[in-house]
Length: 93
Image (tube, rainbow, N blue to C red; front, side, top):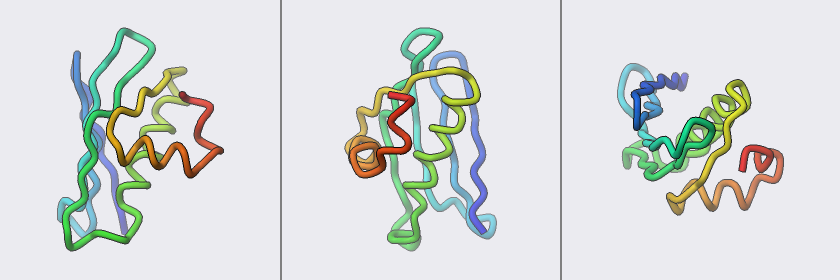
């Protein structure tokens, strides 16, 4: 089962995906003011490729944005592609 933890700091933050206690993926972000954050990097460990880990990280960021009335600027190519493919999450752009 995939578990996602969030660490939010003053200027940056990250979402960490854990599968069976092992780090499966990481997505980092930077704050762009008080109402926006930039997804600047997404990575998935090779053994977890193709299991939807990256997409789950993006969706977790979308939930965080919705709950806190924030907007996302997806600069990372993976996040950009995920927003292009999934219309239902574009409300946070």
